[in-house]
Image (tube, rainbow, N blue to C red; front, side, top):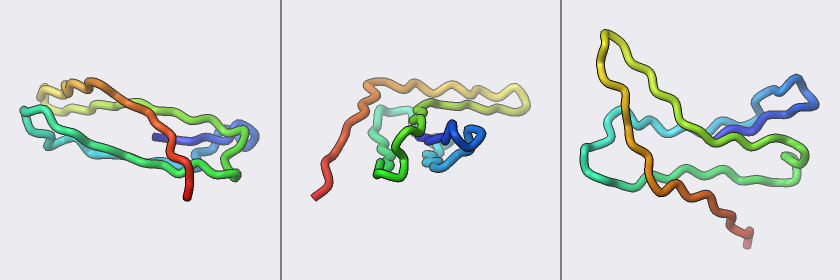
Amino acid sequence: IKTVDPSNAFATTNLVEEDTTDVPDLWGRLSVELTIDAGLVDQLLQVGFAATAANFEASGVFYDNVLVTKSLGE
């Protein structure tokens, strides 16, 4: 999850990553969170996945049932 500020040359203002290098072969659940507050108004939210490999090793991971939700503060 990443936020960028278009009014500041698209500078990254938040970066939340989850390393999936050692994800088991069985289906599992992972979660990442980012609090969106008033300081992020007019910024862009990006959600995505990246894979890197070396020495011709496999780099594929299946991501299924991705859910983006909002939670109202208490």
